[in-house]
Length: 288
Image (cartoon, rainbow, N blue to C red; front, side):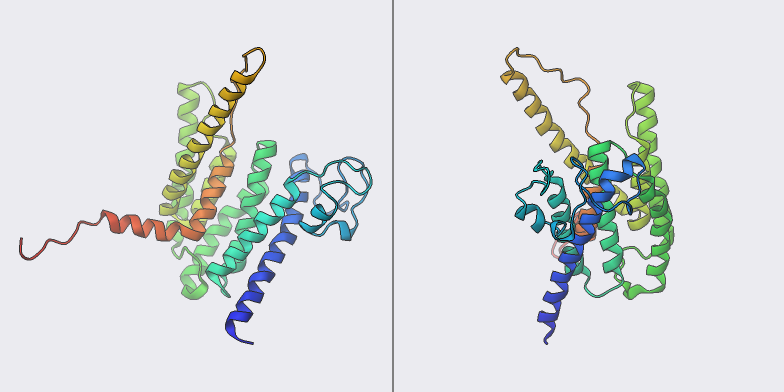
């Protein structure tokens, strides 16, 4: 078996593994905000309570085969389930594609799963689970040590001091924004979950990554915010009475941070190097 064939097999395995992990993430997304166990009881329909058999729990395929409906009560099964599974599968395959058979691959697969979990819990419950951020910060620092000791690990960060700086300055920056917003605008600028999340990302990837992640997340958030406002105004104009209360429309920031963190894994170092090269002055010609 040649290398290309073996590589393709591992790529497919990575995708399948990602969909299986995504199926478990769906359980976590539904149960963790309510303090429920993610292990017991086994998966069941949230509408009728019937247990889901293994053949109805195959990632993506079961949802399609069942026509997005429960086998028993025929109620609609949310699109969230196959979307989470597909996204996680694609991200796992992308991690293998970029890092290959290195220590970095399982590390960043775990990171991707965590970011998917953070994103969907924040979107549905407006919280970022401490079960991810609290152990994630020291784990990021520890991985920086591993990167220093084993340069061939494929890990993106190999400087423990940079990891600590990223966590402290990243978390401190968003914490400061929150306090300023509370003082000036009399409302929270950032949730403390966002502070802990950027500290985790800083611990994993360092200070330069924090700057990249904050910039990209703000950019994405601005674009989505503008689209959201335009859609709300359009809905207001189309409503029969011409009125739509637009106060209180807020969007969680955690998904933008998580998305920017994912982008950094795949493109961050290249983007930073490209930007740094752009800033370097052009060499002066000898004839001038």
